[in-house]
Image 1 (cartoon, rainbow, N blue to C red):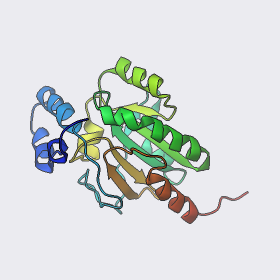
Image 2: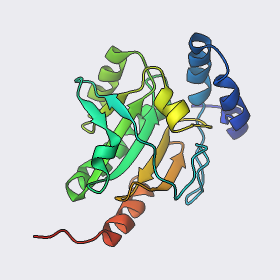
Image 3: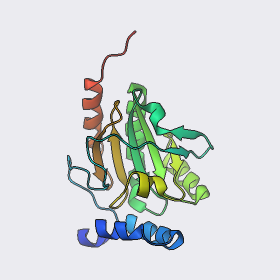
Length: 201
């Protein structure tokens, strides 16, 4: 993606304005604006959402590409969860997918679950990206973007990642893509896993 950092930034005011626009026009504007992503510094407080670090992550229910229903609260106390908001029209979202997949392969057996939430109505396009990028973590479809804009209150660009601990608490977020491996999120998972209570044998 080209352009200056300022060109790629999307203000919170713009995101708030999008919610007041009728759905069809608002969705088109959202797709255009959210794709102009920019990375946030490591350890930043929540910059991509109106939610606050330390609060309980809101529950949601979405279907994956196979029609399976996933309810976020079902994982509370069982898994550390990373949510990645992305879309097929967002090139840097797609560019970082192999990095996320590599992290997922490393941590899925250790008690970490990933959800890639696609802000998209193009199911065929989503499946094509997933196939080309070799993604095996669950991809959920947020067709009307309600989970992104209303429940998780996105106020900035995508890709946008949130990490939720075993207690269901938001502990980390990241605006923008990861360009190198290993990404900083690996350190977040390591710290959470180290602090997690040992499982009974």
